[in-house]
Length: 449
Ligand SMILES: [Zn+2]
Figure 1 (cartoon, rainbow, N blue to C red):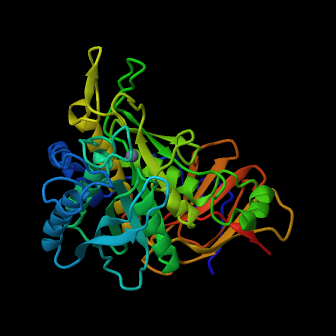
Figure 2 (figure 1 turned 30 degrees about the vertical axis):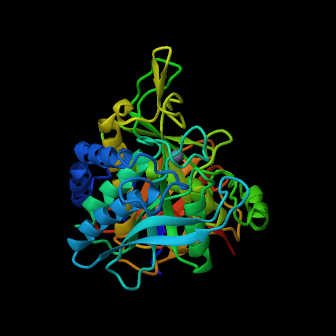
């Protein structure tokens, strides 16, 4: 095994770059992000709103109204993209009977997620990357399945982003598999995502990342005059919901409270999103979700998958979970007229860039270790090549313990590197990188003796 000793910043086989100064855009991903179209997004949302209500407890048999008609329409869009994908994309409504639960479902319902799968081209690569939005909408009374609930932004915005990503990406191929899903049952208690995440865990599916988009197309708050279409939030859990008792000791011992899989994904989403989308800052929030609230990423994190929530910077509560009405001159209700489609375009492109970069990347490096046999002020890292994909090399990521984001990105073609920086004072991780610069998710080293 080749060993690189980095004694100076100019060491021959190692490139040290600060932040993203030497990272360039992959032309294929850049061109895909440019195809994301605000008019397409608006037309999807106009169609979704026209179903009257998309409540999960609304009709599944009516043809023009209710959640059944809406999910069939999403299926028709996915099928249209699939037809032009050369057989790589397939589409279905994945249904199950959900029994009355004494909470937000009073009678058994036919629950259905509309799913498009863009199969990866590498038969050895079993990785899955998911983009999710929820198709269901609600009235103030969440049990009302008949009267209008337009749900343009919550979550027509996330659903439209899913459909638009499927449209653009179905014409490209990726080594890993991408799943585009609009779920039902979010407002009734995360039912559709719960069904999907549990099934994935039971089948031990290799889902490496879930981007849950929920409320991402409006640029203002109801309480201030702030209009902000240049920032979007990504929420990620700190301590892992899954197997915390097994992981807690190591998290405490190594100080990894801030380096779980969801948090790593959030950092990745910020870095890659800002790389490809101009005039958009991805703001990390160190919480699984908004204060005391929930979303469709949660069933995934509870089943051990890296999942984050993407949501607009300011929410307008006059337009969320509100029946459409006018009171004292104020219009309430979740209508498309209150949305900013240029903002939704950027947030959709940000998702697309991340999905594409992940699905084009080689697998994560394996057995990433930090050498701890002797006490030293340096750091020696070693790892093995990923199980699939071709690597140009690896990035060693490095940050101070108080830094939210990676501060240095060191390229090496080696798999064993000594760095003149102390593991006492920095966090490290390693990513695989392809010829086109597509990075895998980072792997935090474990002590190796
Ligand atoms: Zn929502």
